[in-house]
Image 1 (cartoon, rainbow, N blue to C red):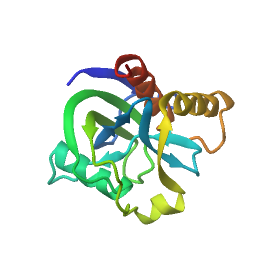
Image 2 (image 1 turned 45 degrees about the horizontal axis):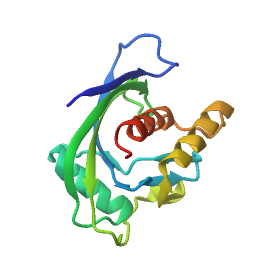
Image 3 (image 1 turned 90 degrees about the vertical axis):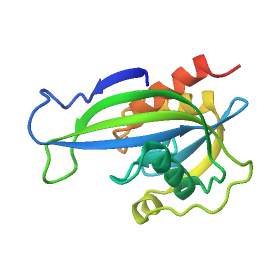
Image 4 (image 1 turned 30 degrees about the vertical axis):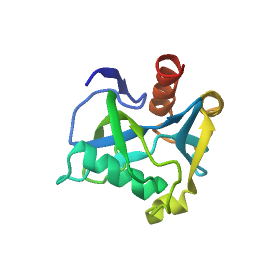
Length: 173
Protein backbone atom coordinates (compact mmCIF):
# COMPACT_ATOMS: atom_id res chain seq x y z
CA UNK A 1 0.00 0.00 0.00
CA UNK A 2 1.35 3.45 -0.84
CA UNK A 3 2.62 5.68 1.94
CA UNK A 4 0.58 8.88 1.93
CA UNK A 5 2.58 10.62 4.63
CA UNK A 6 4.82 10.07 7.64
CA UNK A 7 3.72 12.29 10.52
CA UNK A 8 5.52 13.07 13.76
CA UNK A 9 3.56 15.10 16.32
CA UNK A 10 5.13 18.47 17.22
CA UNK A 11 5.57 17.48 20.89
CA UNK A 12 7.88 14.58 19.96
CA UNK A 13 11.58 15.44 19.91
CA UNK A 14 12.99 11.89 19.45
CA UNK A 15 11.51 8.57 18.50
CA UNK A 16 12.74 6.56 21.46
CA UNK A 17 11.54 4.91 24.64
CA UNK A 18 8.68 2.46 25.01
CA UNK A 19 6.55 2.62 21.87
CA UNK A 20 2.98 1.30 21.75
CA UNK A 21 2.16 -0.07 18.28
CA UNK A 22 -1.39 0.51 17.02
CA UNK A 23 -2.78 -0.61 13.67
CA UNK A 24 -5.98 0.96 12.37
CA UNK A 25 -8.16 0.50 9.29
CA UNK A 26 -10.27 3.41 8.05
CA UNK A 27 -12.97 3.66 5.39
CA UNK A 28 -13.42 6.14 2.57
CA UNK A 29 -17.08 6.04 1.52
CA UNK A 30 -18.16 8.55 -1.10
CA UNK A 31 -21.56 9.43 -2.56
CA UNK A 32 -20.91 12.14 -5.13
CA UNK A 33 -19.14 14.97 -3.28
CA UNK A 34 -20.45 13.72 0.06
CA UNK A 35 -18.39 11.51 2.32
CA UNK A 36 -19.43 9.39 5.30
CA UNK A 37 -17.59 10.70 8.36
CA UNK A 38 -17.83 10.78 12.12
CA UNK A 39 -18.34 14.10 13.87
CA UNK A 40 -16.99 14.18 17.42
CA UNK A 41 -18.44 16.98 19.53
CA UNK A 42 -15.65 16.82 22.17
CA UNK A 43 -12.97 17.58 19.54
CA UNK A 44 -15.23 19.54 17.15
CA UNK A 45 -13.86 17.59 14.20
CA UNK A 46 -14.69 15.24 11.35
CA UNK A 47 -12.87 11.93 11.04
CA UNK A 48 -13.02 8.70 9.05
CA UNK A 49 -14.99 5.75 10.36
CA UNK A 50 -12.74 2.89 11.37
CA UNK A 51 -10.26 2.30 14.11
CA UNK A 52 -8.03 -0.14 15.90
CA UNK A 53 -7.69 -3.63 14.50
CA UNK A 54 -7.76 -6.34 17.17
CA UNK A 55 -4.71 -8.67 17.36
CA UNK A 56 -6.65 -11.67 15.99
CA UNK A 57 -8.14 -9.70 13.06
CA UNK A 58 -6.80 -8.92 9.62
CA UNK A 59 -7.19 -5.34 8.34
CA UNK A 60 -10.37 -5.96 6.33
CA UNK A 61 -12.13 -7.85 9.14
CA UNK A 62 -11.24 -5.06 11.58
CA UNK A 63 -12.39 -2.40 9.11
CA UNK A 64 -15.78 -4.07 8.59
CA UNK A 65 -16.27 -4.53 12.36
CA UNK A 66 -15.37 -0.90 13.10
CA UNK A 67 -17.62 0.41 10.30
CA UNK A 68 -20.55 -1.61 11.57
CA UNK A 69 -19.98 -0.51 15.19
CA UNK A 70 -19.46 3.18 14.46
CA UNK A 71 -21.90 3.82 11.60
CA UNK A 72 -24.24 0.83 11.37
CA UNK A 73 -22.93 0.19 7.83
CA UNK A 74 -23.95 -3.12 6.28
CA UNK A 75 -22.69 -5.11 3.30
CA UNK A 76 -19.31 -3.39 3.37
CA UNK A 77 -17.38 -4.00 0.16
CA UNK A 78 -13.73 -2.95 -0.06
CA UNK A 79 -13.20 -1.58 -3.57
CA UNK A 80 -9.50 -0.72 -3.35
CA UNK A 81 -6.60 0.17 -1.11
CA UNK A 82 -6.04 3.93 -0.91
CA UNK A 83 -2.92 4.40 1.20
CA UNK A 84 -1.47 4.55 4.67
CA UNK A 85 -0.35 7.16 7.18
CA UNK A 86 2.65 6.32 9.39
CA UNK A 87 2.34 8.42 12.54
CA UNK A 88 4.11 8.98 15.86
CA UNK A 89 2.23 10.80 18.59
CA UNK A 90 2.35 11.27 22.36
CA UNK A 91 1.05 8.31 24.34
CA UNK A 92 -1.92 8.48 26.67
CA UNK A 93 -1.00 5.04 28.07
CA UNK A 94 0.89 4.87 31.39
CA UNK A 95 3.24 2.13 30.19
CA UNK A 96 4.49 3.78 26.97
CA UNK A 97 6.20 6.98 25.87
CA UNK A 98 4.92 7.14 22.28
CA UNK A 99 2.25 5.67 20.08
CA UNK A 100 3.24 4.47 16.62
CA UNK A 101 -0.02 4.43 14.66
CA UNK A 102 -0.28 2.98 11.19
CA UNK A 103 -3.61 3.88 9.58
CA UNK A 104 -4.63 1.95 6.46
CA UNK A 105 -7.28 3.67 4.31
CA UNK A 106 -9.61 1.74 1.99
CA UNK A 107 -12.19 2.93 -0.54
CA UNK A 108 -15.42 1.11 0.33
CA UNK A 109 -19.01 0.74 -0.76
CA UNK A 110 -21.86 0.09 1.68
CA UNK A 111 -25.64 -0.32 1.58
CA UNK A 112 -27.41 3.03 1.24
CA UNK A 113 -29.35 2.69 4.49
CA UNK A 114 -27.32 2.69 7.68
CA UNK A 115 -28.33 0.44 10.56
CA UNK A 116 -27.93 1.12 14.26
CA UNK A 117 -24.46 2.00 15.44
CA UNK A 118 -22.99 0.32 18.51
CA UNK A 119 -20.64 2.95 19.90
CA UNK A 120 -18.32 2.33 22.82
CA UNK A 121 -18.98 4.25 26.05
CA UNK A 122 -16.11 6.71 25.46
CA UNK A 123 -17.36 7.38 21.90
CA UNK A 124 -20.83 8.17 23.26
CA UNK A 125 -19.32 10.37 26.00
CA UNK A 126 -17.30 12.22 23.32
CA UNK A 127 -20.49 12.92 21.35
CA UNK A 128 -19.61 10.88 18.26
CA UNK A 129 -22.17 10.72 15.47
CA UNK A 130 -22.29 9.58 11.84
CA UNK A 131 -22.84 12.16 9.11
CA UNK A 132 -22.88 12.42 5.34
CA UNK A 133 -21.21 15.76 4.62
CA UNK A 134 -19.79 17.55 1.59
CA UNK A 135 -16.07 16.73 1.67
CA UNK A 136 -15.06 20.36 1.09
CA UNK A 137 -17.19 21.48 4.04
CA UNK A 138 -15.51 18.87 6.29
CA UNK A 139 -12.07 20.05 5.12
CA UNK A 140 -12.99 23.72 5.68
CA UNK A 141 -14.32 22.97 9.16
CA UNK A 142 -11.28 20.91 10.27
CA UNK A 143 -8.85 23.50 8.87
CA UNK A 144 -10.67 26.22 10.82
CA UNK A 145 -10.34 24.19 14.04
CA UNK A 146 -6.60 23.71 13.35
CA UNK A 147 -6.09 27.41 12.51
CA UNK A 148 -7.88 28.49 15.70
CA UNK A 149 -5.86 25.95 17.74
CA UNK A 150 -9.02 25.10 19.63
CA UNK A 151 -8.27 23.85 23.12
CA UNK A 152 -10.38 20.75 22.54
CA UNK A 153 -8.51 19.83 19.34
CA UNK A 154 -7.67 16.13 19.14
CA UNK A 155 -4.44 14.51 17.96
CA UNK A 156 -6.03 12.99 14.83
CA UNK A 157 -7.36 16.11 13.09
CA UNK A 158 -4.23 16.83 11.05
CA UNK A 159 -4.05 13.25 9.74
CA UNK A 160 -7.75 13.19 8.91
CA UNK A 161 -7.68 16.58 7.17
CA UNK A 162 -4.60 15.66 5.13
CA UNK A 163 -6.32 12.50 3.83
CA UNK A 164 -9.59 14.36 3.17
CA UNK A 165 -7.67 16.86 1.01
CA UNK A 166 -5.97 14.04 -0.94
CA UNK A 167 -9.32 12.36 -1.57
CA UNK A 168 -10.87 15.64 -2.78
CA UNK A 169 -8.01 16.01 -5.30
CA UNK A 170 -7.72 12.38 -6.40
CA UNK A 171 -11.12 10.70 -6.10
CA UNK A 172 -13.80 13.34 -6.70
CA UNK A 173 -14.97 13.53 -10.27
